[in-house]
Image (cartoon, rainbow, N blue to C red; front, side, top):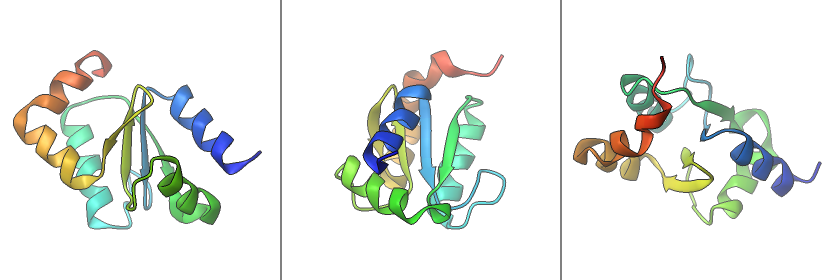
Length: 105
């Protein structure tokens, strides 16, 4: 499968999709760890992809979202952003409003 198609499928199949370094249980960078902490704190269901496991996805997601860094958080197929933006939206309460319908039950 072509990289762009694989990324598109991951984003469209998962309402909250996090492209990160490592896994939620074992993040491999502080920025990825911070987004995982925020999503876990908000108690939402999300999926993740470890970009360290696939170099084509690691580069491809940067091209796909026209965003130069990882992690990248997508909600309803829209790029929210990287760690700084996610953290700002979390602190302002905007992220919680956006993710309210995805709370774990």
